[in-house]
Length: 268
Image 1 (cartoon, one colour):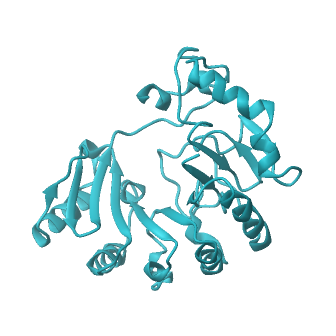
Image 2: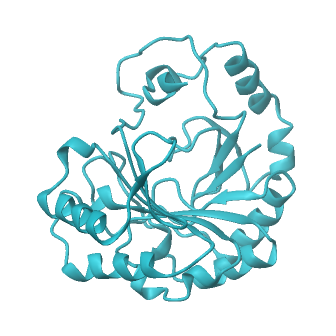
């Protein structure tokens, strides 16, 4: 397994139009996070602290990072960036492998200029942590966001990378754009029942209600394979339900009703 998504909260301080699922107000406790990350460590070193929610909203976020530091887990953190100024020592945590700031989150809302100053201060630091400014739908960015990106291009010696639509600003700092995607929805029409996915095979996700699913685009755990309040992660990963997903995806068979409606998997 390459990575595990652990949603420490399904709460968010923004209401972005591309995020179609309703937000909640659930937070995993420190005890639960300590327990779950211990179990995750048995199978994988790479952890992502989100599915749907904004992780920096968690009131114990610094303590969570201390837990990940102690267990030598490798964290990829995705945030909308609006709360970064609360954590001036964020880059000092040894667990933080990559920090992705979703600029697209602020594309269609009014944002204070201090937001951009916080991002500038962040990327001005010398750090071993990879910092990625990322956004979707690059052809439809707001004028302020376009202006900000143009300002960065003037300030830094920007160069293209081997990755499509990816540019290097300085050592370990990049900005990257990707095609906008639709979250899979059980009410959408079926696309087909043939294909594959990285879900189950390369990754699993644990939502803020402790439900385990095979996909990071399944915040409500429609494809639930277990509950960490009732079973260990080891037992869940040894279950027939989990193994069936792997077998189906390897045989290019789409059995889940949610997966039949997912357009993101068509990329694989």
